[in-house]
Image (cartoon, rainbow, N blue to C red; front, top):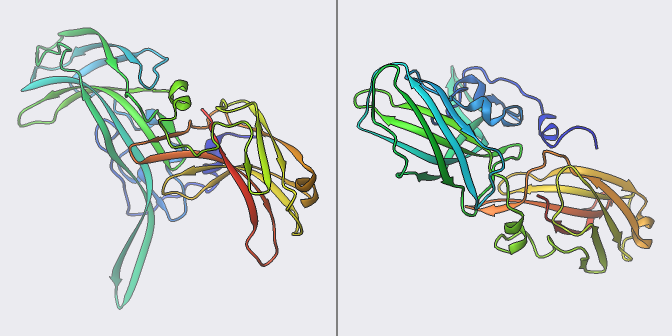
Length: 333
């Protein structure tokens, strides 16, 4: 396939919605305003990176966090905080913490009167909810600083124990941050923040702690009268190619058949990543289909009421009737 995973979501386009705006909590507030709202059926989040949303420092500091690459779910975050105060800081307290956010697009609607008419306005808006906050009380962050004072701290912090990992799944994103905050009385808090990329741990995928579907980790899988065998056996890696051998002796009729790869996100419409057309007879005798996994495809996960799975579906296209299909899950990431 050409393009990336996020290109599939960008296909709907991005269009503004006059008079509407969105707002995310600090430090993900860099784009608060009209850039976080869009016209009905348009897309916003697929066009944004987590870094686009981040306000790395408030006015009281220069510098920032340095985050080492390679953080895994259940592992450690290695960071360094190097900042200089640009004004006097007198805080009630100061704290370093790791905080995660769930960011997603939501459809919004409002009905109001316009003259004698009742008008309903529909639009899309980006929202965020906090997933988890992990304070690092052992980090000695000074609450009081004079102009020009510097902080240089090496920080070792636990990564999220079971996740979810950092993902950009189109209309949903999981973003982890490290923040240093100063609680300023009778004034706006001062903050330094950075994005922490937390990758899925392969051992967690294999451990069975996530509900990914009974077939997700199986190479060979039978369902009803059909088989869908994946080679190599899961879990599969984004950016690689895999094959599916489909044999469905009971498949018949229709205008043709397809074998498709889907991503399923909880509370969202399924997204078809790839589709291969064929004659129905090919399913009866058995057919090998190859799929290329986009390099930016998000990993499977099932944590904190957020689920992302992949599904292979073989179907027969029946005119004027619902399609008939067999399917299985497959673990990617």
